[in-house]
Image 1 (cartoon, rainbow, N blue to C red):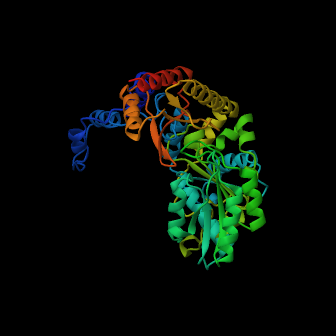
Image 2 (tube, rainbow, N blue to C red):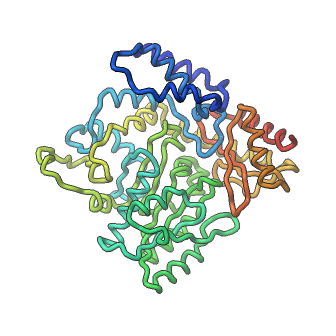
Image 3 (cartoon, one colour):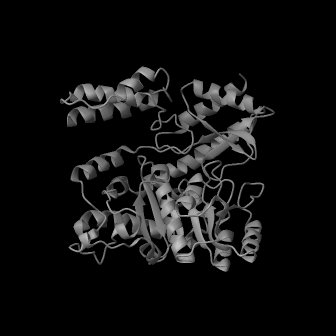
Length: 447
């Protein structure tokens, strides 16, 4: 089984450059087959592997160079191998005393990241299943730290472009929809610091309790970076927890340009990162960095008599006290192995390449008289539309682009206007595919 699996993986990776960008048609019979319950008797692995192949083919190709939609997750093969090793070992990492070696591997990466983001010695990091759970953990910690047990009247400040997981986290944390306040943005889609300050003051005067200010280091819509220095200063003046959603854009801080564009993130109380975006890892890897680890422990530490035999480590964190999970897999290896095998410089160079390619795509599209590009990219998202076209025209344009099956793009809506998006982030996406994508867009705009 092992040899067959590795051969299947090798065939898949080798075929990615020529793979179609999607194949989701004619799926009814396959879906019906896959929905069958498991049999009583053993099956043949070769037959099951073939069934898996056919299932995998009926999807958008998110691992290949053609995927320029949403925010790509690369699926770095060395991280996938790390996950195979970790799952084969099946170590429990919720309490460090049970697996000090595996926990140390993960904690070393977290300490490095805290340093890269300018956080102080008391900071801590924890790997999660993604940005949504990391955001939820941050909101619960902020709620407990700033409001205590009485959360009535607590308010959170966002923009129209804040990721939807923030509102979901607020709802799960016990806040009504009205508690999530939407601050206007400037013409370049950044949170208006002055408007935020006025809204906080007005809410406080009306008896509400402002407690979280959210900045975004790379919005999903356009890749825009909020004015983090101004927001951080406002949060400090008003006693607000400053949360930065850097799930998409955070790892660009490894580059010189990204470090400059993300200036101010070092004063955050919490930062969310998605290595399955900016580090090209497989889906299911998020990170929460928190300025003061005590705030996490205070919010999440629990007791159970059945844990009395377990000794907490003194040098290493007990991850079950830093988030909602008690049962926890060995998820640090998927980060540790690629970083130590390839070196940080490889990731830095790849991220620099993505910034270059997005800038090149923007310049080429903006120079086309039929195409409008409203904003230059802060990071690696380029938004555009066919000039003077209706929403139906834009949808038709997207359909023509994706119908080539050489690239796959997505759309969004900003201030009521339908826009197409091209996001350069996959580690297998290089200049040849981005330039091909630009030519496909230009040809489709004339179609």
